[in-house]
Amino acid sequence: MREVIFICALANLRKCAQRKQLAEIHNNMTPETENKMRVLIVDDEWGMREGSKRILLAEGFDVDIAESGATARAIAAQKIHDIYLLDLKLPDVDGITLLDEFHTQSPNSVFLIVTAYATLDAAVEATRKGAFDFVAKPFTPQQLRQVVNRVAERRRLLLEAERLRKEREERLMELATERTRTKSILSTLREGVLVVNTRGEIVLYNGIALTMLQLSKLDVGSQLAPQLPESKLKDAVLELLQLPENEENEKLFEVEGLAEGQMFSVYATPVPSKDGSEAGRTIILQDVTHQAELDRAKSNFVRIVSHEIKAPVAAVIGFTDMILQGYVTEEEKKTEYLMRSKRRLEGLIDMVKDLLSITRAEAAELKGNFSPLDFGALVKEVVSSLESSALEKKLTVVLELGEIPPIAADETAMMQLITNLVSNAIKYNKDEGTVTVCAHIAGDGVELTVADTGIGIPKSAVATIFDPFFRVKSDATKKIQGTGLGLAIAQRVVKMHRGRIDIESEVGMGTKFIVWLPAERK
Ligand code: ADP
Image (cartoon, rainbow, N blue to C red; front, top):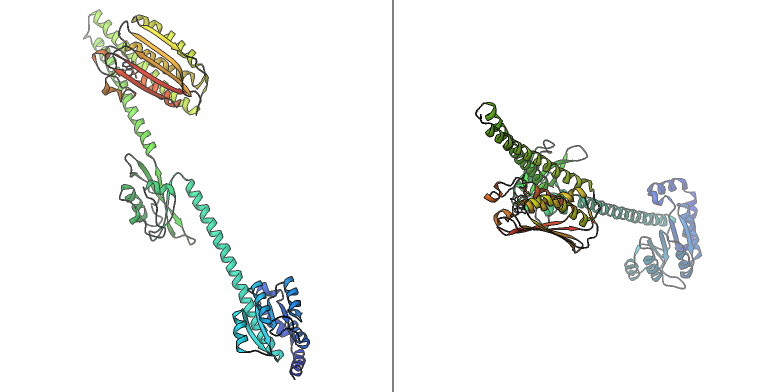
């Protein structure tokens, strides 16, 4: 009887406008499923198998059939099917077991249970194992068509959900990669970066910004202002955030940092959104302490140099005016004034020479003009060139040279360093004193000591002794001519060679300069 209904239904089906139905099915399908959906029919009844196959082929499905559990397993092992029509009563295996297996194998496929013996228990069990729907035998082609199309729709939705899930995962991966990339780029910057949205919430920042603000972290998504420590830096950041949209965002602040003596430049640039409006602001923090120090040192230097030049020039003008205006009439006095003018001008020339040496040392450092130098030979040469001035003061000059390997150095600068130290040891010595110059290997470099038995340097002057133009003012130094630049030059030369210079001195006893220079340029 069942077969009769089924066959009649089949005949009816053939009469139907198949094209129209197929078109309907196609319209229901997503691009992924435009390729035919695959159905596996597992049923031991030949009529059911073949009848269902024909109906579903006509519906536009791709259909495989299996008469037993074993065949079904073999087919399912070859390919995944979109839809499984499973008879619960098979000769060799329980349909529920098969459902369980196939569901595990393809969780996104849809399972339709076809059985003549559907009981509530079987239904519950099959649903638990992943079945989507039931169709009870006997059924009409229309019923089968309806249920299978419903199942196909379910499969389509599952596929779509799966596609969206994958897409989302990929997008998330992309976002994560993008974020990591942005973060690594930001971390390579020397500037501190804070990106804030229009609501004043922090969106992005880099580690340097944290260091500059002396913070261990910033809470992304929270207001920036309450997280910043009270400081001029905070005031500048907040002022930049409050500036009207796109206007004056480039305003630059030079403010003190949180640490003593620290200077920052702070400015903001707008972050545009797609429609051109402002989506937020990027605040850039730049540590300009070093630049500020350099600027200060430079203007200080210029101020001192002009002062040092002005004094001798004014003196020379004074002397010559006195002569020209006839205030000095005695020939002897005139000669004395001219001699004094000459000395001041000579001093000026020395100063210009020394200033040029400083510039030269700085330029050499920039150029990195270093080549292997026989340091011992250079010390010897400088000492012998100064022997005549030592003789004038009846000084004993002792030279102690060890085995010294060549060192990487700028020869002219090095000669200047040794000359300045040895000539000072002569200049500031007492008559019949001693100058001892030693050079030997020390660690991975050389050590040069220049010691004298002269007037010494007061403790109060030691801290500023290397400052340009600094000279100890005392009765002992009054008559000794100098520019106050010799030690400043010496210190610069040592610094450019990445060395060290130290001083030991006792007033009335003598002074010792100790210089260490690395053998290799680092
Ligand atoms: P200058 O000798 O031209 O004055 P320097 O820069 O060489 O300038 O030295 C700065 C000052 O340091 C000198 O004016 C002097 O007061 C002091 N000084 C330098 N070397 C010695 C030394 N060997 N003994 C005593 N005082 C020294």
